[in-house]
Length: 176
Image (tube, rainbow, N blue to C red; front, side, top):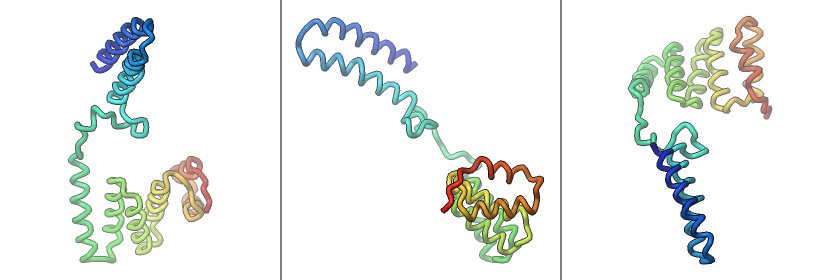
């Protein structure tokens, strides 16, 4: 609907602007420029959203809400933290807490928690992989020297794991 409104306003502005251009008045030309350039730009912004946040058009921002599963994940995080306070050597609880942090897109916390789970069970391939994955997500796909080292170790441990190959090829090498 907003497209129709934008089109009508733009068409009306162009029509009126064509009539106004015939006059030499500067104020009328400014009004024409506002009608032709600024109003459609504002309407497009309201419909499509900010170019830096393309997934959230302005018209949908009011409709965004926290999904029930995210709220449940935050409640579960509190529960896992309480379990870890009671039994700090429980590597499964640490791993589950990292999984919940990753689910809520808190990759830095997930990496720290996965590292703790991996320290408690150093032989666990899954814990090491989850720690590496969280590091990659936290660094926005960039592979640091630590991450590259971990990926090489994971590949040596299980050469058939395609996930390791995918992370190795997709990640941007940013050694430093």
